[in-house]
Length: 105
Image 1 (tube, rainbow, N blue to C red):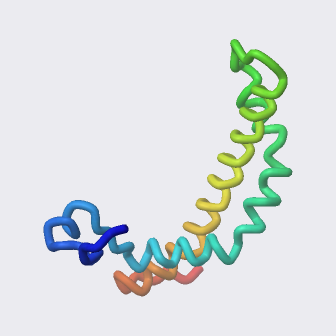
Image 2 (cartoon, helix red, strand yellow):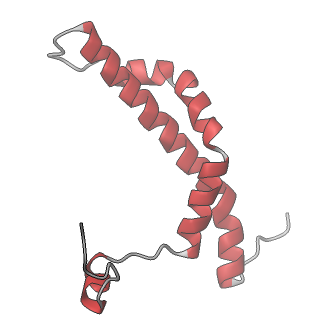
Protein backbone atom coordinates (compact mmCIF):
# COMPACT_ATOMS: atom_id res chain seq x y z
CA UNK A 1 0.00 0.00 0.00
CA UNK A 2 1.31 3.39 -0.94
CA UNK A 3 1.54 5.90 1.87
CA UNK A 4 3.19 8.76 -0.02
CA UNK A 5 1.16 11.54 -1.57
CA UNK A 6 0.31 10.44 -5.16
CA UNK A 7 0.53 14.03 -6.42
CA UNK A 8 3.36 14.39 -8.94
CA UNK A 9 6.26 16.65 -8.11
CA UNK A 10 7.19 19.33 -10.67
CA UNK A 11 10.03 17.10 -11.91
CA UNK A 12 7.79 14.05 -12.19
CA UNK A 13 5.16 16.15 -13.97
CA UNK A 14 7.77 17.34 -16.47
CA UNK A 15 9.01 13.80 -17.10
CA UNK A 16 5.84 11.71 -17.14
CA UNK A 17 2.94 14.12 -16.93
CA UNK A 18 0.85 14.67 -20.02
CA UNK A 19 -2.04 16.97 -20.67
CA UNK A 20 -3.79 16.39 -23.99
CA UNK A 21 -4.45 19.36 -26.23
CA UNK A 22 -7.94 20.49 -27.14
CA UNK A 23 -7.46 18.88 -30.56
CA UNK A 24 -6.53 15.53 -29.01
CA UNK A 25 -9.49 15.75 -26.64
CA UNK A 26 -11.85 16.45 -29.54
CA UNK A 27 -10.45 13.56 -31.61
CA UNK A 28 -10.75 11.14 -28.68
CA UNK A 29 -14.29 12.28 -27.90
CA UNK A 30 -15.38 11.95 -31.54
CA UNK A 31 -13.79 8.50 -31.81
CA UNK A 32 -15.55 7.29 -28.66
CA UNK A 33 -18.88 8.54 -29.95
CA UNK A 34 -18.38 6.85 -33.33
CA UNK A 35 -16.69 3.58 -32.29
CA UNK A 36 -19.36 1.46 -34.06
CA UNK A 37 -17.77 2.61 -37.32
CA UNK A 38 -14.62 0.74 -36.35
CA UNK A 39 -16.62 -2.35 -35.42
CA UNK A 40 -18.33 -2.34 -38.81
CA UNK A 41 -15.01 -1.59 -40.44
CA UNK A 42 -13.62 -4.90 -39.24
CA UNK A 43 -16.28 -6.67 -41.29
CA UNK A 44 -15.65 -4.61 -44.42
CA UNK A 45 -11.85 -4.85 -44.15
CA UNK A 46 -11.82 -8.60 -44.71
CA UNK A 47 -10.53 -8.48 -48.30
CA UNK A 48 -7.85 -5.87 -47.54
CA UNK A 49 -6.70 -7.86 -44.51
CA UNK A 50 -6.50 -11.08 -46.55
CA UNK A 51 -4.43 -9.28 -49.19
CA UNK A 52 -2.18 -7.79 -46.52
CA UNK A 53 -1.35 -11.11 -44.83
CA UNK A 54 -1.34 -13.26 -47.95
CA UNK A 55 2.44 -13.05 -48.35
CA UNK A 56 3.31 -13.83 -44.74
CA UNK A 57 5.36 -16.98 -44.44
CA UNK A 58 6.26 -19.40 -41.65
CA UNK A 59 2.90 -19.39 -39.90
CA UNK A 60 2.71 -22.70 -38.07
CA UNK A 61 -1.01 -23.31 -38.21
CA UNK A 62 -4.37 -21.92 -39.25
CA UNK A 63 -4.93 -20.35 -35.83
CA UNK A 64 -1.85 -18.18 -36.21
CA UNK A 65 -3.00 -17.07 -39.67
CA UNK A 66 -6.47 -16.35 -38.32
CA UNK A 67 -5.05 -14.31 -35.41
CA UNK A 68 -2.86 -12.30 -37.79
CA UNK A 69 -5.82 -11.73 -40.11
CA UNK A 70 -7.97 -10.54 -37.21
CA UNK A 71 -5.24 -8.21 -35.90
CA UNK A 72 -4.87 -6.77 -39.40
CA UNK A 73 -8.61 -6.16 -39.65
CA UNK A 74 -8.57 -4.36 -36.30
CA UNK A 75 -5.65 -2.17 -37.42
CA UNK A 76 -7.36 -1.32 -40.70
CA UNK A 77 -10.62 -0.40 -38.97
CA UNK A 78 -8.76 1.75 -36.42
CA UNK A 79 -6.93 3.51 -39.25
CA UNK A 80 -10.24 4.26 -40.94
CA UNK A 81 -11.75 5.57 -37.70
CA UNK A 82 -8.79 7.90 -37.11
CA UNK A 83 -9.01 9.21 -40.67
CA UNK A 84 -12.73 9.91 -40.25
CA UNK A 85 -12.14 11.59 -36.87
CA UNK A 86 -9.50 13.87 -38.36
CA UNK A 87 -11.75 14.74 -41.29
CA UNK A 88 -14.62 15.55 -38.93
CA UNK A 89 -12.69 17.56 -36.32
CA UNK A 90 -9.71 19.21 -37.98
CA UNK A 91 -11.42 21.74 -40.31
CA UNK A 92 -13.46 23.28 -37.49
CA UNK A 93 -10.46 23.20 -35.14
CA UNK A 94 -8.25 25.00 -37.68
CA UNK A 95 -10.96 27.58 -38.28
CA UNK A 96 -11.42 28.21 -34.56
CA UNK A 97 -7.72 28.09 -33.65
CA UNK A 98 -6.25 30.10 -36.51
CA UNK A 99 -9.26 32.01 -37.82
CA UNK A 100 -8.98 30.40 -41.24
CA UNK A 101 -12.14 29.81 -43.20
CA UNK A 102 -12.61 27.90 -46.44
CA UNK A 103 -13.02 29.91 -49.62
CA UNK A 104 -16.51 30.03 -51.05
CA UNK A 105 -16.96 27.78 -54.05
